[in-house]
Amino acid sequence: MAITPSDDELMAVIRSAIGQVAPEADPSRLAPDDDIVEMLELDSMDVLNVMTAIAEQTGLEVPERDYPETRTLRLFVAELGRLARG
Amino acid sequence: MGEFCMPTLGADMDAGTVTEWLVHPGDAVKRGDIVAVVETDKAELDVEVFESGVVTELLVPTGVRVAVGTPLARISVGVDAAVGAVPATGPPAVAAAPPPAPHPSTPTQPVHAPTLVQQPPVVGPLIRHLAETSHVDLATVPGTGQGGRVTRADVTAAAERAGRPRRRVTPRARRLARRLGVSLDDVHTSGAVTGTAVERLADTALSPEHRPRVDSRRAAIARLMSRSGREIPHYYVSTRIPLDTTLTHVAERNAALPISERILPAAALLRAVAQAATTVPELNGLWVDDAFQPSDGVHLGVAVSMRDGGLLTPTIAGADTLDLDALMAMLRDLVNRARSGRLRSKEMGGASMTVTNLGEQGVEAVFGVIVPPQVALVGFGRIHEEPWAEEGMVGVRQVVHASLAADHRATDGRIGARFLDALAGALQHPEDL
Image (cartoon, rainbow over all chains, first blue to last red; front, side, top):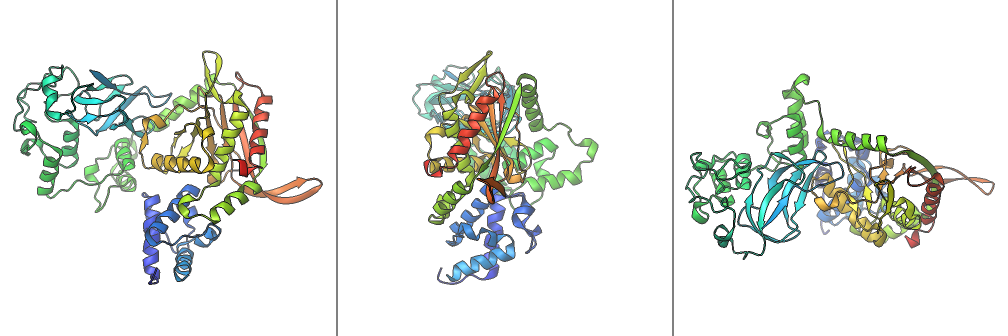
């Protein structure tokens, strides 16, 4: 990605990916420091689908070992930011 | 002349409701085409047609619950697929409809159909359904189709003229609305109508005494599980299986691959079950007429929990013939479609053994109830670290608790123990999975 996306843009991408996987969940209910998996009762297939949706939109592929770094929205944005900057 | 009948979409299904017709009279269909969406007590499923031909008549409108085996549509087989040829050659008097009226829903139109269809056959149920959901009065829609027939495009155009574009309604929202007795018209959202919106409306609109007490999906599970409890003398065995080797193998494999090709440990567990079922075939099959019928392959029913509660168990057919990648792809596809209400009829039923994985919900172990007429169910708990004693030393390992519920009429505990042993063994050699 030539231009590093802003945190707001990354947040929007994450929320939209979560919205696709858990359409009945209200992503606005999710606070920046909430545990995403716990709050929305996601399973490993859901997490894989979130990661896939983000990769499709941004080309950013979160390595599996970094999944713990995506526990909350705040951490997730930081992780994607790191990946985007290379 | 063939008939397309209400299929049985699971051992416990005795009736179903067409919620959507995806074809209408005159449409050419070929074997395997999805022609209708059918709702059972448990789920909405895409239903395929088993012969090729031309649909001459839809016999059951949407929303009417009919027994398994009831003819739903007539299909004329071998007729030239040209749409115009159908009314002339189709044998039933019904298909050769009276001259199409410009306003097909005018009730004075004679009704010849000896069936549940109460309106002139010139307007198919699909179009009526579309008109209903788009809030369009069919009597006011000028038809541009053959003989003045109102087409899909006519209805859509009328809806747009009226400024009420057809809203997208998620399958879950449709199910919930029906179950909770909520009209989708009353749901006000800017985008698609979701299950959450329906639930919210139901919470505010319905006082507790007006809410339907019986959840049909719950009732279907209740029937099947009661039958299992009545008929099947269960026995249980369980074991702890160290998973470090398998998890390391999966992680190393995934590290080198793009997200789309990554696999989940769940796929490795399923693959190991398929191997163990091949090694111990006494557990892989059905109990029919007081005897065990071994299955010709390993067809794994996989319990998938729905986000709004409830459970579906679509089948991975021929799991013993799939490698880990293929099995993962199949699992992913099935889980995603089960959760979005888009399973196909052939994917329900036909399982020779079932696997449930409640580990995702955090429990340490699960002891399941066998799905009749199967004779075994494998349960996996959460993958977690625990102390592990081996050769006089205590270490910490990643462990999964695996259980087997089996039908004592078909096997004894010795066979069950052999199965779990084979399962544990397979998971120590992930390179062979």
